[in-house]
Amino acid sequence: MSASAATPTAAPGRRGDARRRITHAAMDLFERQGYAATTVDAIAESAGVARRTFFHHFASKDAVVFPDHEHLIERVSVHLHAQPATDPVDALGSAVRLILASYLADPEVALRRYQLTRTTPELREREVAWVQRYQLLFSRYLDECWCDAPQGDLAADVVAAGAVALHNHVLRHWLKGGGQGDALADLDGALLWWRGSAVAEPRAERLRRVVVAVFDEDVDPQELAAHVRAARATLGT
Image (cartoon, rainbow, N blue to C red; front, side):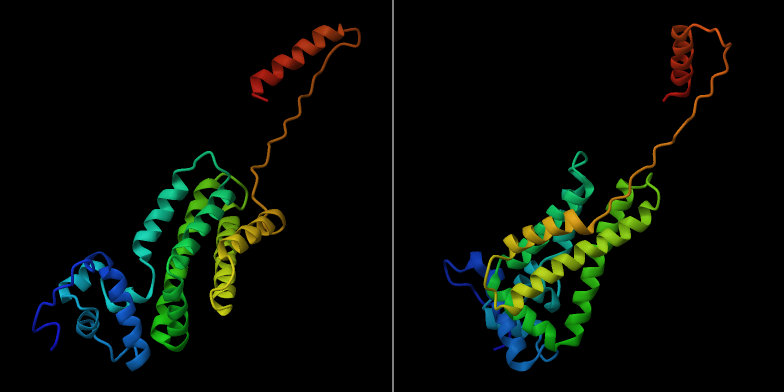
């Protein structure tokens, strides 16, 4: 019986975990018969939900594979811009931590996703596209913060790329290790190293002004000092 022919009814007590059941049903089918051969109808039927329930939780079948990136990118953007007093690189580090935590929310799915994307070029390409969106978000945020600094736009691109590379390194290490260990603690350690030895923030150069005073040889030093202070006040230094 296909999901399009009837509307399955979730058993009592199972409605709250519909999203998780859809995710695991999809992973089972992707692994068993391949990503391309798996349809949304087949996933819905296997999960015991209606087709419309599938689309209530996921926009497409590839959305089942990845975290909710659209929502996560919005959260990260809000997170970054909600901390105007925080050092931009520290804010970026906390944003990277937020992203990693979303990948670790369901370790079993994360590990299965990793194996699936390694063997499915279509999914790997989409994963790369999402990574690029995060990097662009980071770069734009830093560019706003460093717009007055010399080569601020260059620094923004370089630091954004570094933050993404750091996240991917920690996540990949955790995945290759079978999900063992504390990836967030590893990230915190990596962020300390990165923050302390690999990131050079652009600094706005302070404009140096020289005050030249012309005075008589027998001028009173206190009067000279008063003239110099007045000149500096006029220049705003």
